[in-house]
Structure formats: C-alpha cells, structure tokens
Image 1 (cartoon, helix red, strand yellow):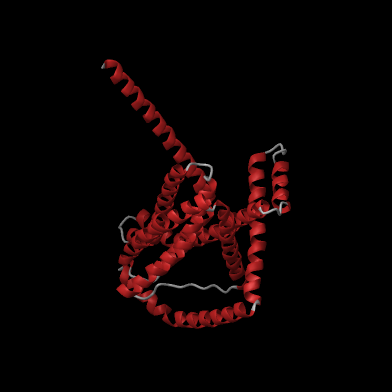
Image 2 (cartoon, rainbow, N blue to C red):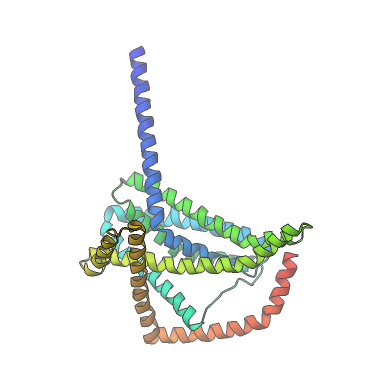
Length: 339
C-alpha cells in the first residue's frame, strides 16, 4: 500500500513537472510570437482612439470595452479555429496568407506616408451621438480589428508551427488575450488622459495644475508619435513578411542580400548585434515601402482606383468643409461634456 502511494506521488510529481515545463514553453513561445506581431499591435493602438473622437467622454470607456469584447470574439471564436484548421490540413496556405497580410500592411504604411507628403489625410471622427451611432462606431471598429487581429494571429501561428496542435492552441489563446488587453488597455488610458489632465487643472495645487496642463498639451503629441511608430512598424513587419515569403517561393536574392548585410554587421567591433538588427529592420522597412508604393500606385493608376480616389477626395473635401463649419460648435459641445 505504501509502495503504491509512493508511486502515485511520484507520478503526480512527474506530471506537475511536465505541466510546469509545458507552461514555461507556452509562455516563452507566446512571448516570441507576440514580438513578431508587434508592428500590427502598435498600428491597432494607433488606429483605435479615432473611434471615440467627438463623443460624450462618459461613453468613451464603455465603447472601448465593447470594441475589446468584439476583438476577443474575432481572435478566439473566428480567427483561431480557422487558423488552427489551416495549420493542420493546409499549412502551405499560411505563407500566401501571410504575404497577403504583409502586402496590406505595406500598402497601409505607404499610403500613410503618401498622405503625409501630399498633406491629404482622412479623419473620421465619431461625432454622432446616441445608441444607433454607437452601434455603427463599434461595428466599424470591430470589422477593422478583424483584419488586424487576423494578422496578429497568423503571424503568431507561423512562429509556433513546430509545436503540437494543443501547444499551438494554448499559445494563440495567450497571445490573443494578451494582445487585446495590452492594445485596448493602452487605448483606454490614452483617451482618458486628457480627462485626467483637465481634472488636475481644477485642483488648488499649482503643481497639479501645471501637470494637468502638461498632460492636456502632450496627448496630441503622444498620439501623433504612436501613429508614426505604427506606420514604420507596419512597413517593417510587412516588408519582412514579404521578403521571407519571396524567399520561400524561390526568389532568394532580396532576402539573401539583407541576410548577408546582417552577417556583415556582426563582424563590426562596436555593437554588432544592435547594428545588425537595425540594418535588417531598415532594409525590411524600405522594401515594405517600395512594395506598398507599388500597390498604392496601381490603385491610383488603374481606372477603378482613380475613380474611387477621386470620389474619396471629393468626399474628404466636403467633409473637411463641413468639419470646419462645425468646429466651433463641436469644441463648445466637448467643453460642455468635459465640464
């Protein structure tokens, strides 16, 4: 009896060690996969605050919470089952899917740079109020999130394809939940930071007032920096995906050239690892910009692209004129909400 109990305890201990090792493996693989998806995450965080521009500040966090729930549904109930199924029955499809997603990232990054160069930017502020308007805002945000979430999950899956299906499932669940919490937690902090600043300006302490004014002034700058970082990250991640995909399909020269450049940097006497990473990142971003610029050019040159672009330009111009006329009223309304 004692021997049987000892054997049982040994088995339990062995299972506990195995579970601990599996947990460590899942955590490490989740972290590795999350790093590869960082570019999409930064872009997601940069895009989301626009959905709560111009609405009642009291509704900002509830709307972000509903978008967060929609993002979790996208990742865990739609993308995860499809991605795992593909990884089992048609793993060869992952590279083309990744390249399509990488092309989308390059296109988005290149288009944002084009907007910066030409001065034409399209901002869609959620100025409407009421339950129906909120539903439209949330629905649009969740649809946009579906594209970005698909990129996050497929990039992550591609990093852990050597794992068993159950490890892949656990890793992708961890990545999906962690990325969603990080992105929308950061977005929630960002959109409420100006409220915190306004609250501090009403305090009697001079230091609190100065800090509050600093927060209010800093938030547009912070959001702009995040947008620029997201733009660069999209080009970097998208370009790297395209380089690797082309290499897998037989076009070895671009990826091999970047790889040789990274190897050369490792021979430098000062900070070889950092310089190698910077060179690889720069090459991927430049390649992503070129790849995205080609797509942007095609969409603007082809007849349907020119027509859509012309319509968009006219729509943006009329929206801009309407926004200029409504600006004083909108500012007064926001001030009333804040008060």
